[in-house]
Image 1 (cartoon, rainbow, N blue to C red):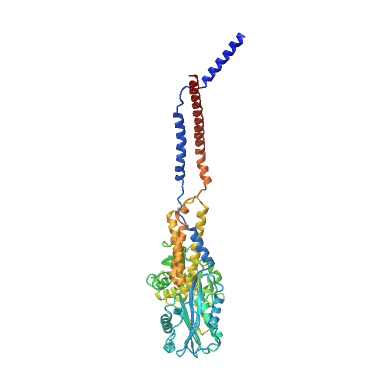
Image 2 (image 1 turned 135 degrees about the horizontal axis):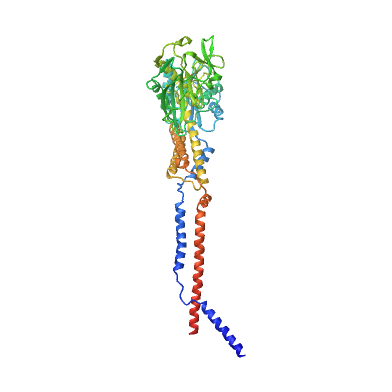
Length: 591
């Protein structure tokens, strides 16, 4: 029994010693805990700075305004206010009261194929014979209706030529409908023995008819002038050359000497050509910012083959060979320094053939010689062939001749180029009268006022839709790339483009065609500048996954070790602290 008691006592002594060894007699220090937690906190505090350093600057884009304006223009295409008025300066009593409706229906039939750039038109018919005044139809306002009292125009017209009549009617229209908001297009109808229809160079035409009793026929003729010419420019399809996206067009004129060994021709383009083309460029200013340049090239043969024609005693080029006429390998035409990457360059070439192929003419599919001896290449420009006087096969072997293109010949060539420019802009080079009684007056500007109105409407509509399409593409691109940099300059360009588009739309509603065209050019140019900004084109954009793939191999292992070390140290500290507290409790209990 005594041995068992001693053994129990020994066991109790060993247990007490083991318990005291698990107790901590001193308070655990916080230096290790402080250092470990400090490292963890520094990582947590540095995380926002890391995210800020990788933040992408994105100027806000007015996406909602872009979508709203785009939807508005697509659902309600730009419509220009126009007023068509037929003015009878002779006694006229229609068989019914629907002459204006007949004219309106004729116009609508011509506009059915167009959707953008149409006229929101009104039609009125006025009989102003001096003794009576009667209005029919409607107008946007009273200012658009012809103010009666023009019966004396018939007497004033007598003895004047067509140019004089045109200016006289222009003065009368400005005086009697000058307050109308929008474009006013007029057709004056008079009774006379010699029937004729003359379309002037402003915004009016006049008719001299023998019989005014058939109101249906008269209304159809008036509607034809309004719809076919004043609204559609006399062309079946309204195709026109798109101006450069920056609103610039460069007209490059080149004089090509095929073989300088035969003769060399120079020209004084600055003195003659630029003077003749200055009114054309001024008229087209609302459509495009047009600049000119000229050059003379040598050793520039054509690439197509010409054939000798015994009957004509000349070389001919068939129209089927004209696509191969331009020799892109030898004709170094693209030397423009003023044209940027988004400008449109139109080439106009005067080709002087060599003695071995002179004279050179273009033969039409009908087997006739071209009157202008020129042709156009769509979207590229035009070529005119000029044969030196007296050139023939016998000219071979003559001494080198250096001469200047005669000014009279250059004027003829410039007139041909103006006609080609008209075709490139979607108009006729010159109008073919549908009947001997029809006549068109040409303008010294190369484009009549009603033709310019057509170009303004077409280009305004095209530029507006193009600018909004570009802005929408940019907005979609920015939204699809969250890491895309959008500089403040881009945001400013987008805002200015929207302002210009809204200004163009307001000018359209007021009927200010030239101002709307200018604003639409600015809207499109700014939209293109924003979309092709160098900061966008020069940077490749990466997704967030790409950035995680770059930073995670470094930050993940380090952050994980720091976090685990902090957790381990906190657990150790609390464990040691609990031992110390247990020791103090045991001391208090024993005392």
